[in-house]
Image 1 (cartoon, rainbow, N blue to C red):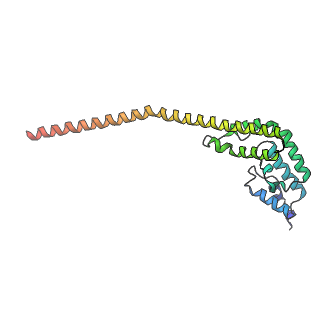
Image 2: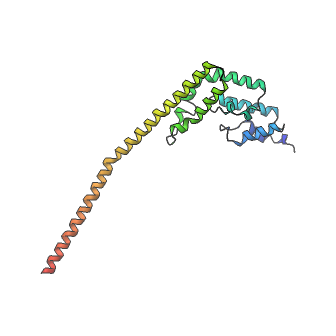
Image 3: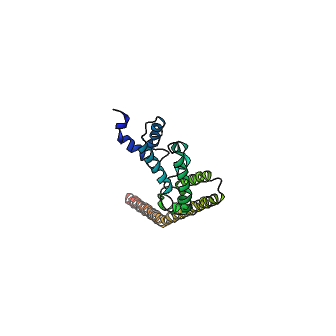
Length: 203
């Protein structure tokens, strides 16, 4: 049975998951293509998938990875670059606000760590359009906006943590007062019993 019969493999590699820099399907698709074993239908589906990820602002790794771009024809690369210019670049602010970025940070994830992949992707965009000053200015503005958001969100997180900590102080103080009162009461009772025992003994 030839590899052509394994359509499940081709289906899988032609639609890799979002984490293009780490999912196994990307490496497998590249290797199959290098060996001439990836049917054209699935190569085109792969290209369409990674382009859609980039244009939708979910992951820009296809802009950075020459290995992924090795599956593109020259015409597909040119069309991809033009779509990035016309569809992606004008919407960078919306992408920053939505998708998996500012509006979707987990409460336990530091804001700088959450936004670092997006800054890396925007930096890759700068390399892609290094000869187009107007686009570079727009990208730099968005990178600056990301860093400002990170700083503001970090401050909000610190303030919330401080408020939570100070809110606990009265309760903690109350518990400590209760502990000390219990200690003094116990000590007083012990002292009283000791005095009574001494008086009985003297009788």
